[in-house]
Length: 117
Image (tube, rainbow, N blue to C red; front, side, top):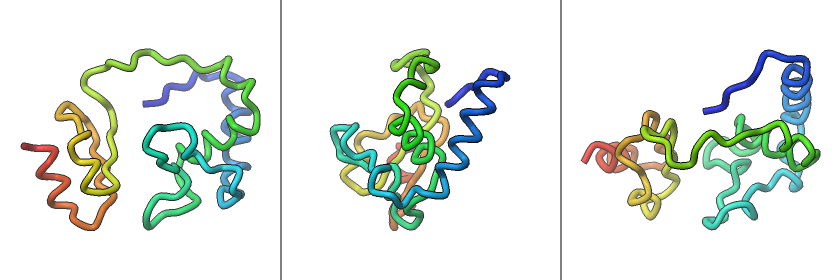
C-alpha cells in the first residue's frame, strides 16, 4: 500500500507522475533491472505501458532525489496488501496472507486455487 501525506510536495509529485504516465512506452521506464525476476511493471500482459507502479517508478527513475521522501514501513508485514502472479511458475510465491491477489494469467482459477489452498 502507498500512503501519501497531504502536502504541496505530494501534490506536485502526483502531478509529475500523471504527466509521466503519458510516456510509459518509453524504454526508459523499464523496471525489470530492479528485481531478481526481471519483471517489468510497465509491460503487464494485456495492459502494457500502464499502471500506477509503472508511472511512479518511472518518475522516480527520472528524479532519484524523490526517494528521500519515501519510507518503507516494513518488508515483513502481515497480512500483505497485494501480490501478483504473472505465470504458473510464480504461484508458489503467493503468500496465503495476501489481501489482494492479482492473477494476471490466462488460468485465473488455478491462481485463485493457489491463494485459497
